[in-house]
Length: 166
Image (cartoon, rainbow, N blue to C red; front, side, top):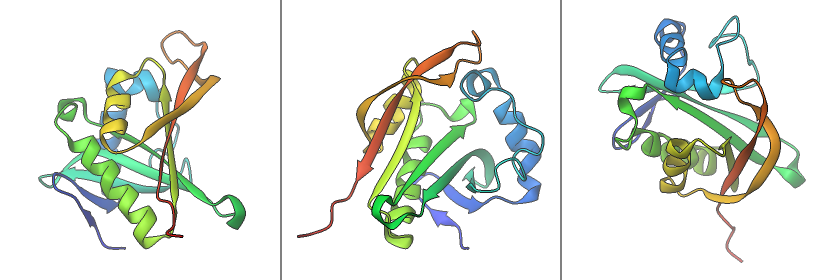
């Protein structure tokens, strides 16, 4: 699969050579607070059902975006997730990466609905997701682990939908 180009980022299918840099980003306090610690095999073998792309900024590994698909035709949609090197937070790279991935999922893979979720307290992620066109649709209670407290926390569920022409 070819790389996907945005204004600030390039999304390239994950390569084995990206693993060390992605694990280092994942372990930063700003990322691990929301994602925990990487599982054995991250990012190459821990979630074989996920399609993963390395986020490149000026050719440098700066994060990862992944998606999973619900293939059932009557309920078909995709779910995405992203993390970026904290040094890139607030610069528009996450928003660009989400827009590029959304475009790929809609135009290339035929999805009409894409979801993403985050902890209610993760205001950095919420701001990014909303700038990328996602809208909040509700709060899922006790939906994800808080890796600081160990408790289950509430999460915002957001979606972006392209309705077919009638």
